[in-house]
Amino acid sequence: MSVTTIGVFGATGRMGQRVLACAATDPSLKISAAYERPTHPAIGKDVGEIAGLGAIGVPLAGEIGTPPDVIIDFSTPESSVELSKVCAERGLRLVLATTGFSAEQKEVITQAAKKTAILWAPSMSLAVNVAMKLVADAGRALKDVSSGVDVEIIERHHRFKEDAPSGTALKFGEIVAQSMGQTEHVHGREGRIGQRPRHEIGYHALRTGDNVGEHTIVFGLMGETLEVTVRGNSRDSYAQGALTAAKFLAGRPAGLYSMADALGLNA
Ligand SMILES: NC(=O)C1=CN([C@@H]2O[C@H](COP(=O)(O)OP(=O)(O)OC[C@H]3O[C@@H](n4cnc5c(N)ncnc54)[C@H](OP(=O)(O)O)[C@@H]3O)[C@@H](O)[C@H]2O)C=CC1
Ligand SMILES: O=C(O)C1=N[C@H](C(=O)O)C[C@H](O)C1
Image (cartoon, rainbow, N blue to C red; front, side):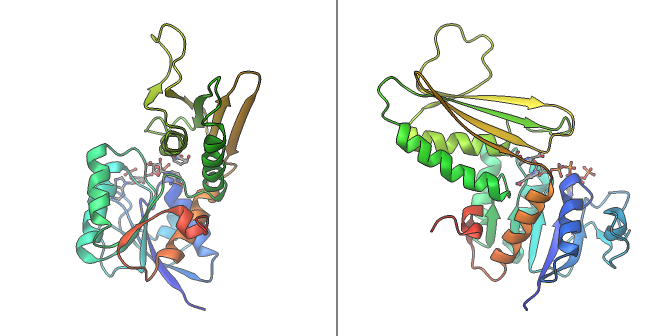
């Protein structure tokens, strides 16, 4: 059996710890490194201890020393962008799961993927990526309904989330616009007086408690409503997806890959 070595960037965060925990039980993976910012108070401590797994012999590092086969990143937009530049310079493969990028930051990542293999997805979840296919199909089927179809996207996440709407909600909106042709993306309805125009997609973000992530795409027709909903029950859905992505990416040439590639959903 071939073994893929991974390094986890943002290792002490909510997602970083679940990635470490899931990887530790997978014999086809070896955790060889874990990173945080160089000034992080836990630098040098065993990351297994930090993640509640017991010691695994991997100290938390502030920089990339001997590189793993693939780095998995769940951190912040600023640190992810810097990481993508380092990966491009050193030819390191990167699973990039962070969300909340500006247009300029997205361009830096896109350029980095010309020099190394980057799998970039706002959701590593299998169910979410299958839902993306369903939503594209629904959009194509409903695009020409003469009385019009209104699309609104509702997402719910935990109170600690720092970006809104979620990267996944924005991706769902992109997919809907590609399949149906809406030209405007509207966030909330306050101050929007008058009837709803047809050419917009509405986004609504809720932040409550410890919700690990829910997305509902509402297609409102005259006389009926179609909704596609995905609910995360545990962060392990994203962590397992990121590990699948790392195994897929190992040994790949430079380029920008998606979760649909890793899951074989493009076939
Ligand atoms: N694609 C997907 O499937 C998913 C994506 N996400 C996204 O992943 C990101 C992280 O989420 P979550 O784990 O909840 O967030 P957390 O805030 O819990 O974790 C982020 C971690 O990144 C660390 N970090 C910050 N700066 C650096 C740096 N320069 N170098 C290394 N590490 C750094 C933080 O450290 P410190 O605390 O010191 O700042 C923290 O430990 C978010 O953008 C989220 O939206 C989340 C779930 C699923
Ligand atoms: O911050 C989170 O938690 C999540 N973020 C991602 C997003 O912004 O889409 C993915 C998932 O929904 C969890």
